[in-house]
Amino acid sequence: MSPDPQTQPGPLSMGGARAHHDGSLLYVSRPYPSIGDELTLRVRVDPELGAREVFVRSTLDGDQRFSRCVEVDRGGAGDTWWEASVTMTNQCMNYRFLIQTHEAVSLSIPSACTTAR
Image 1: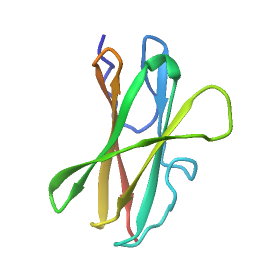
Image 2 (image 1 turned 45 degrees about the horizontal axis):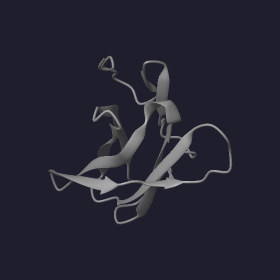
Image 3 (image 1 turned 180 degrees about the vertical axis):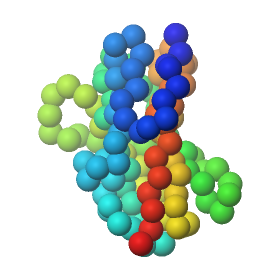
């Protein structure tokens, strides 16, 4: 089963399991970055999705770049949090999370854009 296409960042579900990133302070470390700033981007993943690896796909001077996320403990039961650091290199940085599951299914959370001040 493949997820329905979405146009806004937010939850992605597959078989009832969900992943979520909405661009708020819980998910993006700096809401108003400057070019050159390091950002931490986070995604929350339901363990039922069976995430094996998570990546952030961003663009650097027009070329795509994949940053491996690490699983982090956010001090709560339930969902698993993953995060990666990326550098703000353009005025607007488009990115999306790619989730590789145990069933070798790749899921993608729709693009988000962080804009430099």
